[in-house]
Amino acid sequence: MKRTMLSIAMVSMFVFLSGCAEKGPVLLDIGYRPPADVAAGTPRVVVGVSPFKDDRGKAASVLGRRVIASTGLENELVVQGTVADLVASRLKDALKARGITVKDVPAWDMTAENIKADGADIVIGGEIKTLWVEALSKLLNANTRADVQLRVSAADTAEKKIFRTLKLSSKLERQDIAFSFTQVENVLTEALSGALDQLLNDEEFKKKTK
Image 1 (cartoon, helix red, strand yellow):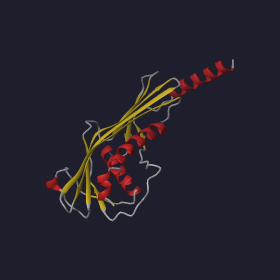
Image 2 (cartoon, one colour):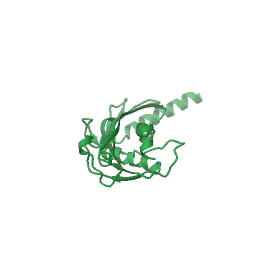
Image 3 (cartoon, rainbow, N blue to C red):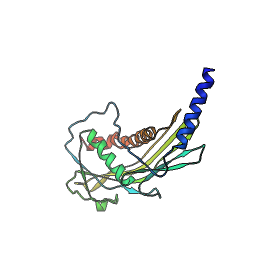
Image 4 (cartoon, rainbow, N blue to C red):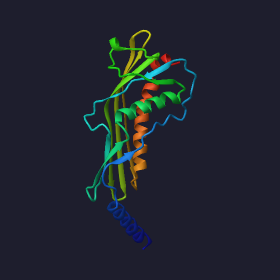
């Protein structure tokens, strides 16, 4: 009897929450989460971060969608500003977490002939190929999938030479009993952080930023 009552209560709560689901775009707050063992050193270089190019073929501020299976209701998931701004900002956070001095530099097309110092020892530019989170809510089952694919180049401004070009990718999927937008934020935050850490953990890049 207790199990039956609990099941009824949970189903009723799901139906109630689904009926009261927010309509329209939902703003997400996506951060950067450094690895537990990251250590902030004392690098002597200044890294310039160029604006990222958004090659996803999607609206500039949209980074996903949430679907309620029982009602078909969908929400666009958006970020304040643009996804390109988000990625550049989180990259700067990742660099700062390691004690690296960061500055904004003008847009760079990732070619050797257009490398400019602009007060930086190293400049980083990039393209966003994929950055998307998909959340599906079912009865007692919330599935969230995030996919991040970036292409980045790093150049030595004194040598006018690109020393690293990498494809960064990270996928993450999580199952939960209950849905929450906070969980969606966490999944995409982890996926984006994992992709950015692939650059920061690259041995050639670490040598250049010591």
